[in-house]
Each structure stands twice: as structure tokens, then as C-alpha cells.
Image (cartoon, rainbow, N blue to C red; front, side, top):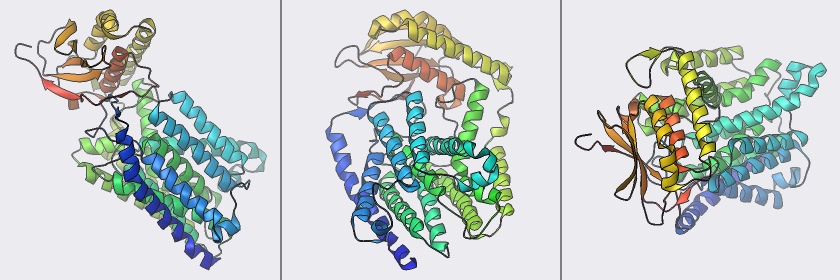
Length: 508
């Protein structure tokens, strides 16, 4: 079996070249469609319009390499077949379900609740096929055996979303997944006894490793392609599922066996935990987006794009080494203690310990407590939802004029004293004042007529980087309200405009 394990690198090399050689063809086809993703977001850290085709190509490269391994006369085909009802087959089916769900979201758009439902379906399929968590079963005991399947499914769903949240800088999520798959593969190679299940898992991991490597060739900064939700969902699910197949090379207490998957995914779960905590404290929906993730804070601290990614890769590699040491029986509880200390230090260095401090008001010089801020954010969100319902069916200038008075009042509460909507060179809606405006923030709106450029211009009293996270989130909701687009739909329009700050005109 040891000699058979040495051949798994064929799958990695095959997946790498299939992905790397297919990517340019898909990118040309994507651009040949003549459509661009013009999603308006204040959270973007890139410029230009970059295709979200990486996940599709990774799925293709991984699938072709894996099917070739199953069809050929090699160790994988001798130990596994395509329609076997095994935990590994369930893991692959679940990864395929979430990958296709993410692909549909990249191309068309899905509501958050629909995506979550499909993730739960995928995790349920994997569990029904026999995927289980031995360390968790040992921890809870046979008396509570019934709780382990839903907890296993919950872990898979959490991993999908954790990896998705880390997909914010070029190469970041792909590099984390690459390190994770490499850790699993090295752990299997280190095992003194390699059985048929180990070989099948090793082949699958090697194919995933190669596919991610081929994608990273085009995703390193500055990226030519993004993985999109298709890639982050697929990689997050498959990585978590394969980690549950990883066993220590010798007996460890259940607690140490249990932490192995968590150690590999320490950084994504830390980032997701901080995201859930701060959103709850700020009164914003948990599934809403913000620009306060770990990588955003590194950029705000002065790190360059490439240096921030390199630092987070290094942190992931450090936690992966601790996981590997736990697998081979070195370190034990010291590995867990080191991880906890590292996370506490990181929380302080990144400033997350200030989440409960008093904050500057959205407008004015006074400071407010986090409870008052949370109440105000929730009030504005409720008002925006009410306006969305009231203005349903309206579009273009009719919608903008109808919403202007109440939107203007909400913007004033957010520290934006005035706004206007322009179509071409004509101003069709104007509200509030521009006195003391530092700059105009121009955001594109859907065209009321073919060939016309529509733009929402917000009068900012401060620089865009000085806006608080809650302000950015609420301003994005205001833009969505004015645009009249469904929050689930991804808008595909010809490339014309860009998000930009424009200096205030003389005289305000």
C-alpha cells in the first residue's frame, strides 16, 4: 500500500495542468460574452472587472482528474468506485452540491437563506452517506450518539461559510485551502499503516491540491480571476470533509483528536467568529457583508495587498504545523495552548477588543455607547426595509423622487447631508445640502433608458476611508434601495462606470 500511495502525486499534477491550461480558455469565453459584473460595493479592494470563473474551472480540473483516476487501472480505481456508498462519496457529492449552488449564485444570484439551505442539504447528504466525526463521537459518548450527525453537518456548513468569508484578497482563500489539503496529504503519508480508505482520501486530496495550485497561478496578486462562491463553497466543504477523515498516527485522547480539524481551519473560523460577534453587537444582520475582516484590518494597518496575504498564509501554515504535530503525536496540549494564546494576541493587535468601546456618532462630535449605536443601526435598517416594500414596482426617476425625502433623512442620520441623482448630465433628483462637502461619492444606478448613465452622488463630509463600518453597510443598503434591484440578483450590465470619489464642486 505504501508504494500505491506514492502514485497519488499523478492526480495532483494532472489536476494542476488541467486547471491551469483550461483557465485562459474560460477567461476568453467569459469576456466574449460581452457582459461584466458591475456589482456596486463599498467593500471592494480591487479595481476593474475580474471574472468569477475560477470556481468553475477548479471544479472541472478536480473532477476530470478524479474521474480519470477512478476509470484507470491505478490504486484509486482498485480501492473505490464512482457509485459506492461511502463517507468519501458523500463528501464529494456534498462538495459538488455546494459548488454548483455557488456557481448559480455567481452567475444569477441567490438569497442568503437559499444558499444556507443548500449547504445544509449538502452536509446532510454527506452525513447520510456515512461521514462521521470519530473524535466527536468519543467525546459525547454512546448515550448522546444522536447529537453527533447534526453537529457534524453543522461543522461542514460552518467551514463553507468560514472559507467564503476569507475570500477577500487575491490568493488568500486559495492559499489557505492549499495549505489545508497539503496538511491532510502529509498526514496520510506519515501514517505507519496505509489502508484502502487512506489511498482513496489521499487521491482525492491530491486532486484538490493540484486544482487549487492551478487556480492560484491566475489568482495571485494582481488577480486575473476570482474563485467566486463556487470555488469557496466547494473548497470549504471538501477541506472540512477530508479533515474528518484524518486520523492521528497513534492513539490520542479524544480532545486532541477533536481539535485537529479546528487547528487547520483556525484562521477562517477566527475570522468568522469575529464577524458574527461584531455584527450582532452592531445590530446588523449576521449574513450582511462588511469590510472589517482580518484582511481588511491588516490593509487598514498599512500592509500592502501582497504582504497581508503572505502574513495570513504564514499564520495558516503555523496552525497547520500544530495540527500535523498533533497528528504524529508531538506537542499535545501545548499545541492547543499555543493556538489559544496566538488568537488572544491577534485579537488585541487587530483591535477587536475595542468592539465594546464608545464610538463617534455618525454625525457630530459626540460619542455613543455600543448599545445606543446598535439601536440606531437597527432603526435605520427597519426603515430601509419598510421603504423597500413601499417602493416595490417603481423604477427610475419615479422611484428616486418618491424615495428622496425619507432617504435624505436617513442619509442625514448617517452623516451624509445631501445627495443627488444624475442621468447623463441632467440632475433629476436633488435633496439636502452640500455645504461643507469634502467630496462626492459617485455610485452607478440601473439605466432608466438604454445608453443613459445614471449615478447616485452622495455628499460626503469626511473621506471614504474614515467612514465607520456601520455607515458603509447602511450606505450600501441605501444604494440598493435606490437601485431597486433584488438583493438576491447579481446585476449584469455593460461596463461603463466605476465607483469613485469626485471632488466637491466649487461653492458646495
